[in-house]
Image (cartoon, rainbow, N blue to C red; front, side):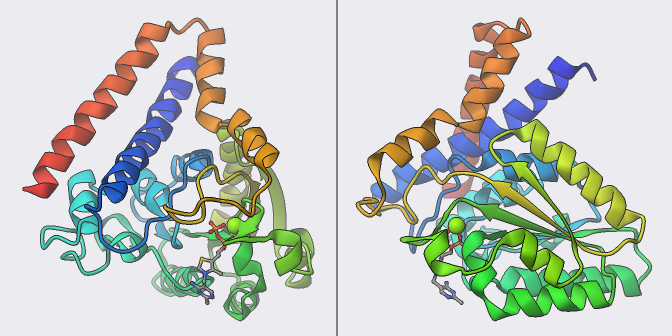
Length: 301
Ligand SMILES: Cc1ncc(C[n+]2csc(CCOP(=O)(O)OP(=O)(O)O)c2C)c(N)n1
Ligand SMILES: [Mg+2]
């Protein structure tokens, strides 16, 4: 694959997540989706940069903001949409919804409404990989807010003690609901890793290539048997904590700055610099829209 083909592939995967979530945003605003909706718009580079390196046997646990993680791991779009509509044709028979969607067949062991809970599930999955002699890795995506949860501390401890094959991915978007990170957590992510003797690295979470490069080094070490790794990706949440959140607590200039760092615009810019025509980028967008239209029709039955 040429570097341009590779970047185009990453662009398509990120754009697909963005367009799916924009469609969910509109459906939710129209009252067509039950429950709560937490969008990962602005954070797509983390999901895609990491999941691009995972195989079918690798497992993944997520949190309440898990649409991007699920789709990047290969979740079926029709079953996903049906699940979010609460329909019987959904991947979890419509009983899980956005915050509890899962699909064991692709190693996606669950989104989760309990902050920090995905870490312990990933540790359990990693233990299964180890005990059964599988070469697989368990990955968990969690937010910066989970750093203050007891479950996280227990999970890091056990993972290190038993040298489990687990990649802990902290998506640090600076906010835990309506509370800035520095108010909710008195430590720091590198010191957290250090406290448990876990390897740590940090990546620009708005740069898909940087995320993939850092994750590649971490996964190589984990697969070589070195035990867990904590990768912190610095990113931005462009939408509110949940759909309907007016973000009145958030300085307007911070939101403007976050939008300027949009990870998808960044890749589009790189592709244009590499000589890819706008028409080709538009064609990708159109094919993503067609796929979403078809999946929605099939899901809504
Ligand atoms: C154990 C627990 N405590 C509190 C909550 C309420 N809650 C839901 S999301 C959230 C913030 C999570 O922030 P973060 O982990 O940084 O993820 P982000 O929303 O920023 O992606 C909180 C406190 C919860 N769901 N579970
Ligand atoms: Mg956060």
